[in-house]
Image (spheres, rainbow, N blue to C red):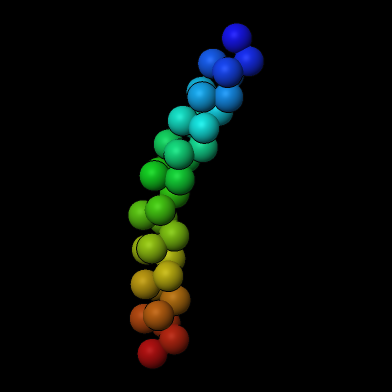
Length: 36
């Protein structure tokens, strides 16, 4: 049953990464624009 928890945790982490990636990319582009 510990294995199931680990799998779920990893899936949650991956899901969070997928959700946050666009935000990171957008903020990076914004800083690039303001840097210009």
